[in-house]
Length: 403
Figure 1 (cartoon, rainbow, N blue to C red):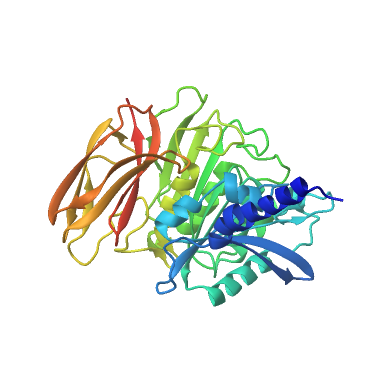
Figure 2 (cartoon, one colour):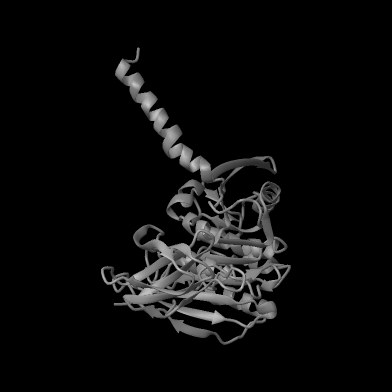
């Protein structure tokens, strides 16, 4: 028999889970299951706090690596804070186990024996989600790490009628994807890859039947008809201790305004920049900043995008930066903005993983041109986010602090 103490302990644990952690997650994160091709498949969906169903919103898929777990990725590879700020719905699907018992995405190469219909699975998720939520179906994006990066390329090749733009961290195209690729539209692509990656070789060939980064980039440069010679930007080496540096290769000017961008992490391994390994960039932010510029028709004209453009209300609300990433910020920088009427304004700073580190100001400002001093003298060099918000509008920007 249970003691009174044991009974009370379990009741308390139940109440904590139900009213505490469980309730908070149930508010925003839903685990769904569907049957596809005779298999029970799971996926996690995150609805941002700003979603009210009145406006169509983008959808972003994030795919785990080989042997990975979607629930873990939803937490440690967290894009939820970005989804809250940018207002997109986030979906993290779970790969199905292969004959070795490892969750995977069917991409050819070392998964060539798989019979799992992952393309159909993702298409069914899109269709179901569009029935349940108000989605902008011209703005469905995908990125993944390692095997998930391979799969993003597979989606661009085989489900291009649904996918607007893609990204890959530590992944590439398999020979099978490359040879059978049939994109339905010009598709913008961004990749992040370490030159010393011991798992997915930068030069190709490992895993077997894997294309090199040069071959993969060349495919999409040619397909999108972008500039052949890239603009090369040296990203500030804000973390001298991570053993790597980053160069950004920008192939712009493609059909319908499409682009191909590549972050070359020199001496980088099979890492997730901004999470572990290289800390000079935040890969998740860079990917969203890039893909959100495009819809399925190409470059979005005259539309605000997260981390890049100003958010405006009517003709009067806006924000102007003294400096902006990738240019380094000084420790003290004025944030200038205009208010069409008196409003409560907050300015909050977050670290590179989305944790709030300081609330700079939260008070009423009068109508007109205003300015707030953002002082980061007490913080070390690196990448940060700041969010300037009124009750009706907000804008989030990245900043590279160099001291």
